[in-house]
Length: 254
Image (cartoon, rainbow, N blue to C red; front, top):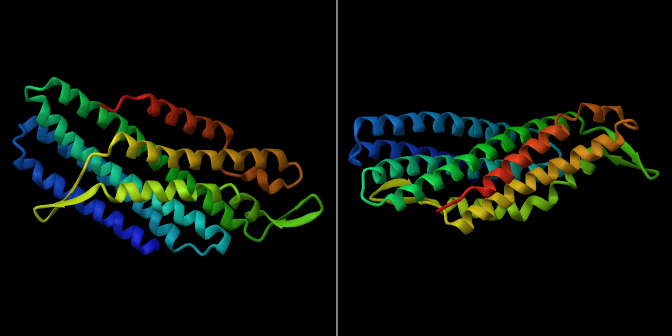
């Protein structure tokens, strides 16, 4: 499964290259081409970072109870990579429409770009945070904690917060894959609908909800189990992620 998802990230990278190559034939002026090139460079750097997380998690030796979470994270990384590619497509579209006669279409493209850009950035941050959490959980995979008289593996407590995100992440991944399309033998990106964006936002919310549960548990039990004091996500970090998601939800998309 991980290999298949990483192949999707590779497809996104190839589509970004194809989008960049076709920009020169899109009738853009020199300044517009420079803006597209700048966007492509920034996007490639971000997609590369997502790919590195996916490769890291694919090769990480983790218990079975943690493998599902790593699969969710890898899928989320693929979603982010595809949305970064959509950013490139929208950058080209914005430039093309700005010189056209329809100001309404131009404003719609700008609104779509702003929302997708904010969402892709949030997914990148969620992916990096997920890698940090996974590494911490791996380092504590042999730790146990006593709850109500029962000795429980610490990792099992944390993975209960990630189980609920499965369907949301699968739905977002399924939607994102449809955004890479082939036209004339070249890969390109279609622009997601409002409903598709909402599906992807729901997956992002599921990560934040999971992190929030983990932080709450760590805060409640760290006096009993000091290792929890080193949990790498803070409440302020969760609040910041939630604020970013709430802000992007309010952005128009048309």
